[in-house]
Length: 166
Image (cartoon, rainbow, N blue to C red; front, side, top):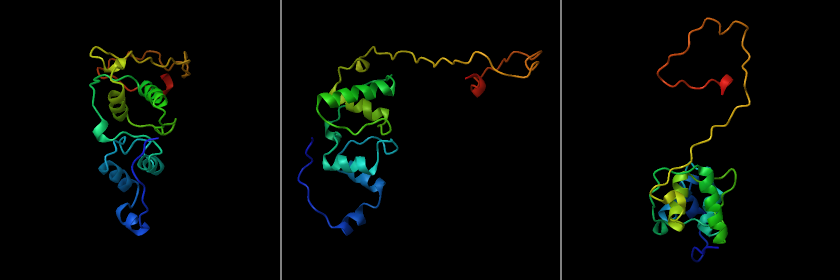
C-alpha cells in the first residue's frame, strides 16, 4: 500500500477544533494534496477519507495528476471497470464498490494520468451509441374508446415520456 509518511498522535481536542465534520475532513485532505473525487460523490464518506489519509486506500495526489482530453467520455461503467483493472494490476485498493463510486471527472483524470493510451483518450474516439433498454411492454391498458377520434400529437418540443409507455 501507499505510505503517506510517519503517523503521529494528535490531541483529541486539537483535532476536534480543526475537523468538525466530514466537510472539514474532506477539505483538510484536499489541502494536504490528495486529489479526491467530488464531495457529493457516493464514495466520499468519513471512512474513505480517513483510509486515504492513513494510506489504507490509494488516492493520487494533485501533483501526480496529468489531464488528458476526453471530450466524449464512455459510460461510467466502462470507466469504473478500467480503473478496477488498473488498480488490480498495480496491487492497490481504491475503495470503490457497487454503492461507493467516484464522479466521472475524477475517473477520467485518474485513468488519463495512469493509462493515457486507453481508447477513449484517442483523438478520434466517439463513444458507442447508448442502447435504449427495450421495454417488454407491447400493449397499454386504456378504456375501450379512449384513443378514438383523438388527433395525433404535433408537439414541436420533445415531450417527457409517460411512465405508462416507457
